[in-house]
Image (tube, rainbow, N blue to C red; front, side, top):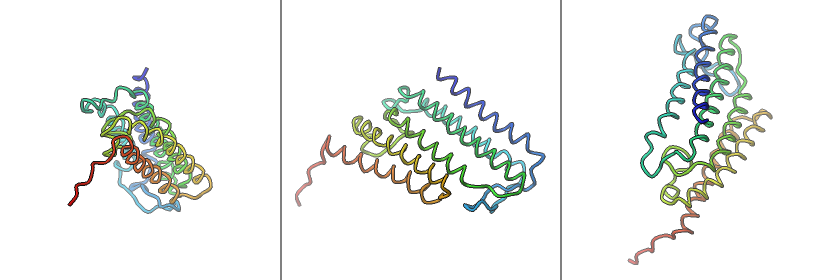
Length: 218
């Protein structure tokens, strides 16, 4: 079953290259490649790099998601959440394809690129990530990897149960903010706050479970 998610991810990568190829001749050279938070063009990139930048990044992301579980160290295997890992891969690639289409259309038309749909998409991506965080077991590549979560399996589990809720909440905050037109600060503050709270919580839980080493008297 899981392999079909990887096939779907590869199809999304192919769709990204196909979208760039289909619009290639209609794109200016150099093409707009970056927009500020007001949607105004503030960067360009020459062909062929501009049109194929995002599809190339999609291919790299797909490959990384496929390779990382195979090189995870012994004792930190990722086999227990392969389905969640594959779904996260598909979600990330779908978001990147969505952004690519928005960018190519805006570059072709030479107009503005509203940040609102992208911010909403990021919020959905964060919420999906949160939905699967609780299923992620201890590893070196995904999750809240603090010294305390990596040192203790119970700390990892408790921290990620909380982090899952925090990320879903942060994603919803970003979605609502994007729909309302508020973009920069909610996009930065909400996920950063979720990470910081989870990291501090991991230390607190570690201290409760194992205690801190006794201080030596001077």
